[in-house]
Length: 107
Image 1 (spheres, rainbow, N blue to C red):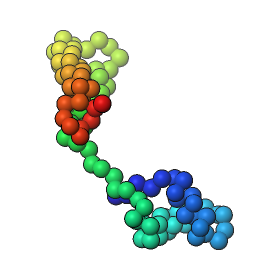
Image 2 (cartoon, rainbow, N blue to C red):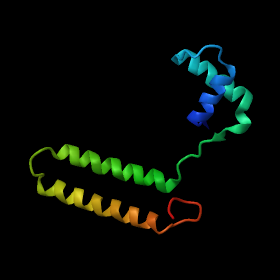
Image 3 (cartoon, rainbow, N blue to C red):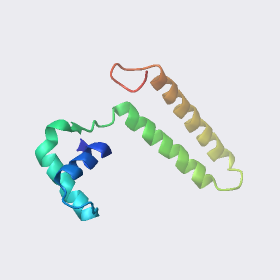
């Protein structure tokens, strides 16, 4: 996958398009041509690090537990699980903020 700057795409469209009309089909054709001819000017999208994937999983689990809780106070067991998960998530964010790995997420 390649990242395409919207301004780059607009300039490419001006360079190759005859009319100013835009459509999804024309945009797809234009982007395919851009990748074919100017791929050396585009950069590949980097994948997520293992830490970023772990944060996504923990955050989704936390959100799911909150949604399952409903509008009423949760039972004692769920309340404990949510608190445990919240503490785990906060610890993960703190460790990311310290720059746990060189080249990883963090300052």
